[in-house]
Length: 273
Image (cartoon, rainbow, N blue to C red; front, side, top):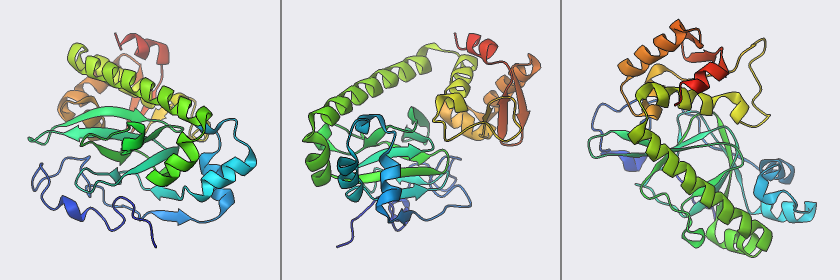
């Protein structure tokens, strides 16, 4: 029996989204090139998906193989939705490569970013763990690789192991603290401060060593359009463009089409407040 994953047949349940006929840049289907999910079948490849994830750091090779067999590896293209509330499914995602944005949408179509998840993070809809999406969307910011586990396998392999269960609890605690910080920033920080904070969060230094600097690049680069950055920050594209030009005028960043190069990390950090 084939397992059911989120959006295996596309986002058909989003025929009547809250944003209407003109979707914002982060909406499902907005990107032109959306690849289908790919299931990589070998145990070695699936073990690679779990390797270096913190919650599995001291498992034996045999234990890793057993978990890998129960956690198919999936890939999503940048801009593709991993989870939508209109198609709920109780699965746990283990993020191996790329970044995922978790966000919610108001009735008026305004997006609020709740978290930007880095490799090694677990997320998804799993009542067994107290892990909930609460009506949020999960979008791939880059090309993303995840391992996917269903409830029975989470209970069998993760919660039954005291080491892993404890680390999952710690992870969820950190996630709550990060959410509180992001909500606080959205209320108390100015737009320039939020733009600077977001750029620093998305810099390659904050990711795994699998994403080094681009060949020949002397400075870290963030691959986002002004429109995408505005969706992350929670403001308009025009406002983000104005702030970015101010930062560029101060020599903190360099702008190119779909790419922002951070020239002075320390000075940009001073802008975060």
